[in-house]
Length: 429
Image 1 (spheres, rainbow, N blue to C red):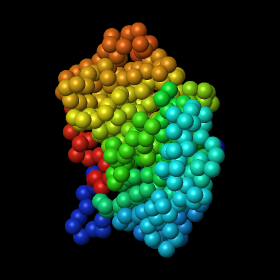
Image 2 (cartoon, one colour):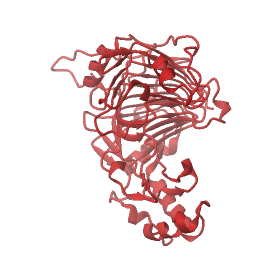
Image 3 (cartoon, one colour):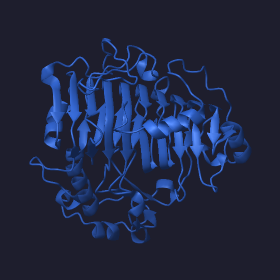
Image 4 (cartoon, rainbow, N blue to C red):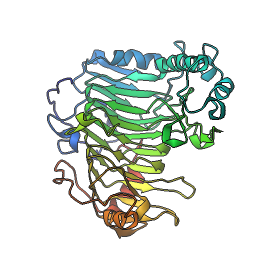
């Protein structure tokens, strides 16, 4: 793990009063406030605020973005994204579609014929079509997986900065800020069939929109994460399973630590946020300390978040489950997780019950106070225990001490209104 960074001067993050003659606010050198969640601990998070002028870049296309990222180097850098950047483009800026990546004779119809469970059985796919799929997937990964190094700030300019088709990968990096950016449609052209997944088999995709692996001191703020452009709900069914094209919106795994996610919007997606990737990843113990506040989870099927091992402070978030959403659960309480939930608001249609909001996989504890469900106060833990007795273990409230690094915590009703008005890209005030 890379060492932490020296602290630099902090910039106030509240609403600014800017005279009419003054220049527009420049958020690129702003840093995390000293009490703003776990990412403020142990030296804080300053991103690329210390970058010299030579390492401040404004980028408008993939080639410029790749050069600015510098292969994920640790040089302090600020990257400002202007307009829309499409990661699925060649070096000349021409759009690439799935057919452009296909190689080795890969063909979806042939792939489906080769690995149909009725004839192939339950063995892992192998042979020419799987080899061609892997080679094709590697060609796409080369274009869309973008490494983010230590001491980096990535911000969107104005209210319309979009990065589509990309997977931002913050791996073994320290001190990163990502703000004011609409990240959408990290679309996998070449999902793999996994016959034994879930008992019935399933399609597995690559490319989390943002993936933190072994990352420390990361602040993600005012971003919008979605599948906009190619929603999985509109994909066909193959082998009686939805042909998924997207993985997680924001996954935090492999010993990542000291993370704050604030004022962001995760929407229109199946598996939104995974914290801790495996029940056997015991090296995550004592890590995965994460704060999630003032975020909106809208039309999300599951994992909002699902937590293993992590110590997660979840406060003042807004959950919206529209009519017609295939909702499975919101909070996933996994192995050795410690979720301290305060003053969160849920809005759901009539067929969704409070007991549907929480699911446990080997989890033992959940602290949940101040929760609103369709405007009424509820006790998530007690109701979960009452309705799931016999199918899931009862959850205690013992998740350890209350996290101390946080800003003002409002009532769930007040936060619900504020998040509806202020979360997501283009809404920094």
